[in-house]
Length: 378
Image (cartoon, rainbow, N blue to C red; front, side, top):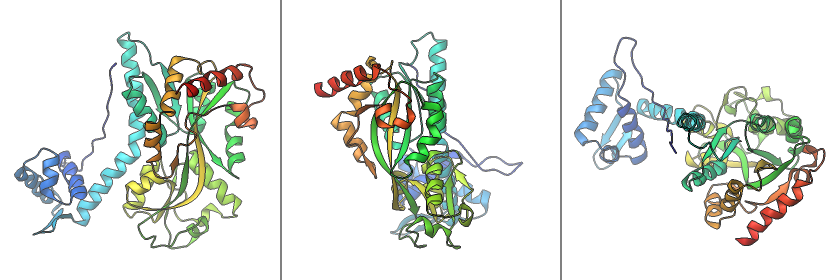
């Protein structure tokens, strides 16, 4: 099975001049992490002399310093150097799920061209850190999986149209549940589907360390000095936020930056960490990764929806076995704000969310019995 990897490459240049070496950008990123030019050069397999040559070349292009060196205190980035690093982090944060989806699609096309067996399971899922870990684990275990990251609406539409076998989505726990169910009911109502839990997770406010703007609630987003960065329109996170604002009588237009949206949780966190906004709304793991503080606001249930005819197949039994594996559940528990206590639990859609199922299909009973047997066998 061929694997496809895609990495974003970017550079800076004058219209008539050569581009800034991409190796320099990589070096600055490593310096920001290690605090040392020597260590950064070693991590990239560069000699110290070559690293210095790259820095000098960049400083000559910009006619401004990129690094500050102090004896006994290592290397620190100048404001210009830091801006370049944050641009790189934002690019990777925004594009990573998109490029991973494209990699999977291209790998499937290559399998078809080489007359190899197609993927054993097709999954469309809204991006999340638990499902990301699940996909990685299944790939390491040798499962041929074709996946695409998409919004909840797009994933459920693909499930209804037969473009995938499994859809990954999230539904708020609490008052906003009804709003979310209404948004997805047209795609799921009446379908014979089984729900497989992965984890619950927390959504909340990502703020800079120490919370200097004192943003502790959604109402605080309306303060005139607070700059906000949102998720893109149509995302499940944006839907959740808009519903909570409506419930609290807060007008979105009172929030500075509300209409500016990023396409991933990590991109929102990077935007705040770079100083371009004071607060964002999203998941806890990227907030912690970018050394931000986090104010929990809401909880969600992240799960897979599987077509009933796929549930008894060996590939889905493999997925269930992974979700119920204590080692994998430990991996999910290490994600800030994630709780995998129900990972691998199987419920009919009609039982979990009656609003999404007009009638229960008779197959549901046998599906649950079979998957329960796997759990008991573990």
